Length: 127
Image (cartoon, rainbow, N blue to C red):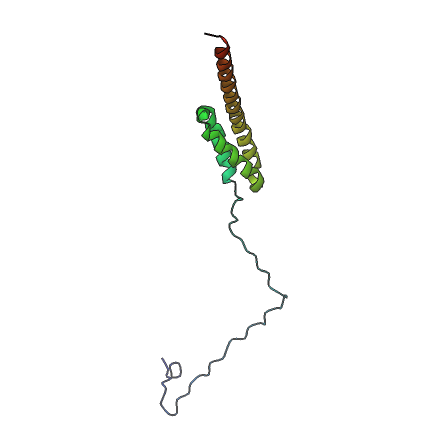
């Protein structure tokens, strides 16, 4: 190995090679850079619509509670108004829950009607 290859600094008379920067081509100008954002886009909300439909299906079994179909009916109304992505599920919940709410209303009217008729006939029988 020669001394020219590995020069020692601080010694007089030694030749130190000069460092040259490599020459690179200038980058071409293409205008404004475009930014592409790829990411997760959350699904549109439809929680109330799903809850209404589920409560409508549960009402088939638990419709006797009156509370389950009533809550499902209210959630269906809210789902139709506020959640366009879940409109079909909200309408399904409205129909199922509505049938049970109407069924309860008819049952209450029937019971009140029969009770009133029973009271009316017992009062006129004259004992």
